[in-house]
Length: 545
Image (cartoon, rainbow, N blue to C red; front, top):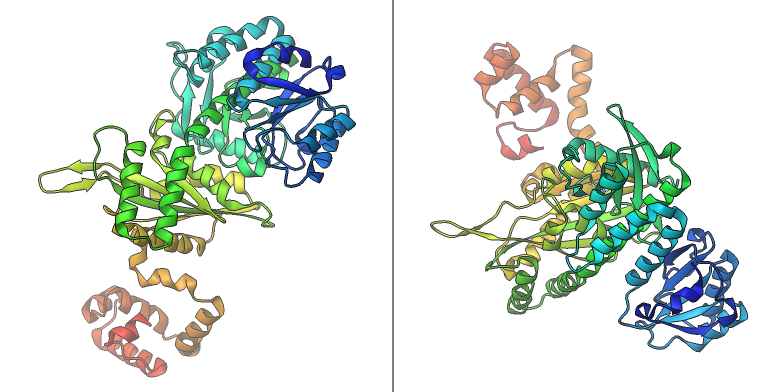
């Protein structure tokens, strides 16, 4: 399509600010970005949409426009929401580089412009197949909505393709509803597909990624949100899994599927936008809790949050806190926003179909940490309102460890902490500290993806990972080396005897039976242990040491 055609569509809200002589340029795609240097994501011919968040001073406009012109983009459209009117320095920079410049009125979303351009460009590329994309677009954006399921139904009916939209952990977000579409993907297979996708995506290779699992070939198309560095969204991007080998597809069909992923990305962006209110609520509550605000003030905000997160006749819910941290190698990518997007995708019952449960959490981020506020509806019983079954760290880890570990590989690490449920504003501060401490416990463990819950904080053993390695080694050597040396010289088996004696809680009879020893022999060995270590095994403190 030509740039000129965009001005002929009044609903797009575009106003030409410069470059009238260049309006016959061909638009081959669309990209939304607020990166200061988006050159690595540009291939030429794009209409670039920007909210101007990259602009800090007038000189930034010249630098940004020079990059776009060098990449051969077709034109630039700047939103008015961030700065009001488009700044003069940007108009002048575009004039110097002969780059057509449009302004976008505040009440028109970039998603609407993206949909229009994708539809037109896909139509030109795909010929007769463009009718499929057009039907997808109309059904997804029509009065009845439709969503990704409609897209997948049409892929099945028009192109005989079985396809699913999956989360980064393999939760099925959408699947075909056609009667002959076949069964849903088994959870294990979906998680493996998600893991294969993350492993391929982190290498930077463009999709589709082709994999063969259990004798069936799948093509995995990333559903990417434009304008964001891949590392920022790698762990939270959706994917389109198609049961087919795209290796021998004609270019037209590949273009069509890429167009479908862009339409699904628009739907994803729409749902992300709906999370804005919940994110703001979470941020406000987090700030109140961290600054030690009075419980009454926190309770007032919780009363506002409850009906937003749990619509319907739900009163006095219980709450859980989940804290997550993503750390990348090199440390140049902020982890807080990455962890926020990730929690919004994974804090969902893996057996639940569809995206709606993800709307029942509110996630904020600060620095390198994301904090999720998870409401648990009260379940009335005969005596009191007890919370519905909440999140458990072990269950969460079972779902996320394998696929997300493939995406992190040796380049990053995810640690998660889960609090106990609390029923009032007074308990939130303690729940936040509990979740943070649980996350630190998880961080002390080996592995790319680790999680710990409140139930694990009751044992002194969990404190040991926070003792420096050299201190632990020195303590162990000072206490146990005399026993090891004695065993080595006399083959007395004092170390195994000590382990068995402690395992039997100091019971002489049970320990002697386990070791097949006479009780007197056991008493002799324990006496030798006490002599060599200087500890009394009848004392609790010495047993603990």
